[in-house]
Image: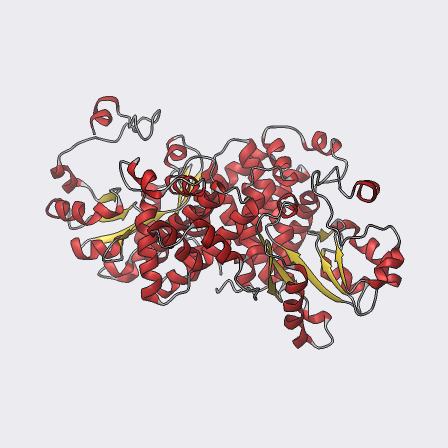
Length: 306
Length: 306
């Protein structure tokens, strides 16, 4: 908050991008009462605590927009499910998609999914029209949100892609090539989709911006993503505990790999790539064992399982 | 053929990769009679001529595997449709997917789709079992084919991705960022899928290796792809005629952009990205005009159209 107030810039995370004129920086929770649209940008594992704290300050007419990706550990809850407990009377929405903040801040063209949660509306039929009005409120010439009503799909895609990103990082660290990375992205998307659909998501969401779009961006970017970097270091042979001891905050994908494994088991979905990442991160198996296991699966009919 | 015979290596296209011991190099068309599996690797626009030439030499029991990607101009035929005319009595299959030859040659893990054309079998029920036996014949520990019976989908995905690759090249050449590239890949996949499904393909093929897999590889690779390179140079402001005058053989995507435009019109599918690439390549519009057109489309509900 300090550098945001004094310099109107987050010099650590988004250096060179100044806050827009209309934005007021404050540490006063009372100010939240004035907000009709509240963007929640705290890390997934802190969502419960932060929204509980803000509960008395929120306007009951406000709509909450979740900008964080992840699954709460222990409960295996998506962020909308957390809010259903902490702020049950407020309307909920989620944004997700291929949007590196650095590029958004520089006004480079960006398209994202904005999904409203119909179950948080007293009249669910008002959900999509509300989404459309949010597009106008949040969108600009260069930042183009597309409306959806599938919060489950958008959140499952946004969270689980971090596990596939770790797998792609391992492929990179082991120098297995771009053919292998493309295969991991393809099969990973199929696993994410199967898990999502079992949890109640719509198939088509996984082929949209929050699905294919974000997965591709995260797995193929030249820029550093924390998840692919973690995988790449593992692939190069650096032990996980060494990597984790270097981190100030734990890479979200490490939690998600645990949660994804838990969800696959709970929902009864076979997800070999997600399982492999989980086994590697939990120390149950090694990268070499998992690679040879994946390559020795029998030949079969390609079933992308739509 | 010369360097393949003398050095057992294609020093121009795959330097450093030697042919396997079991492979015999010959210019004698009579030798084709002995082949039970024939891989067709000629450029798409030469497929008709080459297969017509080989027609008298082929064993009637042989199965043809098309390895080329593209749509025949003028006829707008897929390669299986060309063979249906030139070699109507032979069984047909297609391979496609994320497989840079350089990586395959170095034994890096690669997964592809192998689709058989049931309409080319006297007993269509034998198609998938034949595909399974082809997996065994072509596969190895590092080269993993997956069976399919959707030749239309595999070919539409393989050909049309080249048009989206040109669009991604333009995004790169204009330095529009990775968010924009991810959005182009996502919306491009949706357009390819709609065109494919209208032509008779199965939706799920587009989310498999020949679809998402190959599109991602082509659009995101660090290596040079002729299509993304062409787009990048256009994006940097080099005129098309200058670029084309430098090429010995025309980049396949230039033909495909024309054919894709023709197919979209013929099949009655709205494909704004494919149309934009076509207009830019045909000189009907400029990159700047097409970018501002795409960014000024009204906000809407995201419909990935599965």
